Length: 201
Image (cartoon, rainbow, N blue to C red; front, side, top):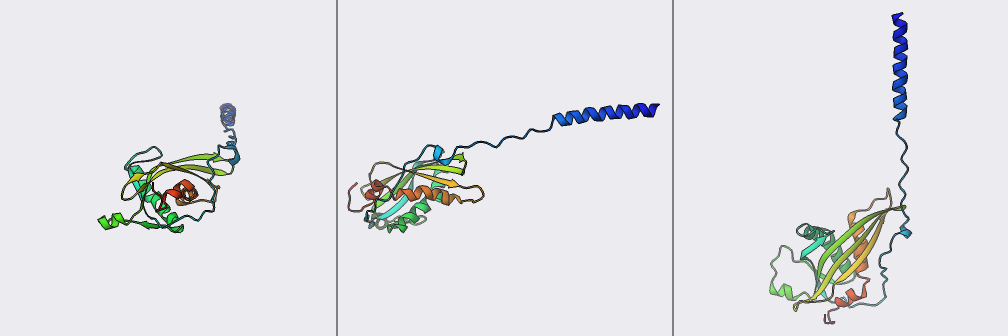
């Protein structure tokens, strides 16, 4: 009799536990719904005007003392801009035919200073990620200025936007993302005009 009672009791316990387990089965969470790339706010468009720009100016690219990177100030911003953005800007300028001087770790003699006609100073870089149906969209804005050397007359501030789409599974290095912004810089006629050595700024 005791064995029969034990079997019944065990069966009831198993049924109760099974009921609880069944109720706690997780419900499938629907996939997040993202807008398509065409539905998010556009950034400024840049087109090459086809002009043959004067590229005789010798340039130097640096970072301002109060630079910012996504609202984070120095020294983080100066380190990020120096390591991530400056090499890309120098490379794009060289690809366009400009001479770009680098003086890091070298004494800045008067002769070296006077060999530069245009000083390009990075002030701020912002980057924001938005998930879209096509992947991850990175919108960027680089703020910089151009100065005439040796007078150091500062021209107006320039802002250039860029957008980079990273498709899932494809991957893209950060330098490839940033380049989408830097590439637009040399499509800005006002920026290119400021780099012409025979144009006062």
